[in-house]
Length: 423
Ligand code: ASP
Ligand code: MG
Image 1: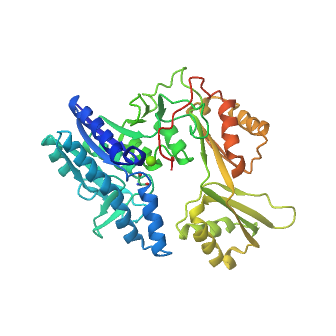
Image 2: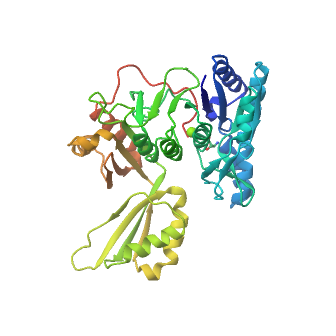
Image 3: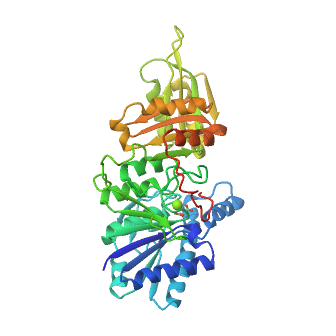
């Protein structure tokens, strides 16, 4: 007998019929002898709709009230799923994030889980009940307010529950059959990965692969929770996200895990920055004060005798107004000539632990982009990843070209996207 934590995403619980289907799957898992704890996302596009609604009421919704609003989405699905499971003859009880003991930091809209006190869930399990937990939410103990974990946060709820309960596996049910070598919505010949290491998955997620939230992978790696990403629609074996040693590390392992892409970033270029010690520090201190997360940074070599240089960096599109305001407020201290924003950029990343021990990977990557006629605007690398910025309009062909160049295409038939928009 084992303990299984299952997470069902928004497209798996999109309507009443979908909820009943999920209920039957949970009941099957119970009947095959497992203890089951379930966490759910909001139904379909509920979260997006609630956000839109808030913006119809006001231009700047208060972060605390926004969290109260958004947590309602997951509470609807948890209650309905508990009812559906009960009606199948298996006792189930729904718990909000705070009731389930999910304790977070106070940052509304992007709180981090600090701890899970799983007493109530353990009591429910001991009584033979299925515990259904609202994903994406928790409680801050100082303020006694509910918080949300950031978009896609139910993945993190699932892993945190699995870690706190000592579950044998955390199953993440989604609308595709697992983690693919590229987004199957863009690359229909993408292959399903049988397994991927935490490290690779973390880079895939941080580089735009939406199948798992980066924070959830970090959490799983820290507590060594095995994640099984699979489809609630097909029941096929999915992708295991595991420690490197368990993943093999043998000759059979592919050098490259996959290609990720991201269209959600923008680029800010600061021109005419004095080429003296301290300029970059002043610029990025200003950006940091605005609490903006920066991704890539490129500083040009200053042209001969000008004494000034240009610095470009990428950041989430949504953070552009905050970043610009912060830089403009420090304009005098930084002493730049101009500011330009470009949000028509895309980022393509190639990820694979095998890069460490194989040469020629970047050359092949750049050659594939050249052959596809894609210009490279910025480059960054880590030991297991290469990322480049391109025009947004070239992003999809760039992803396909790189995927083909690294022999990742499969002939086994097209990947199935069972539902949802992947957002
Ligand atoms: N419902 C939230 C979202 O749409 C959380 C989640 O689905 O994981 O981002
Ligand atoms: Mg998700």
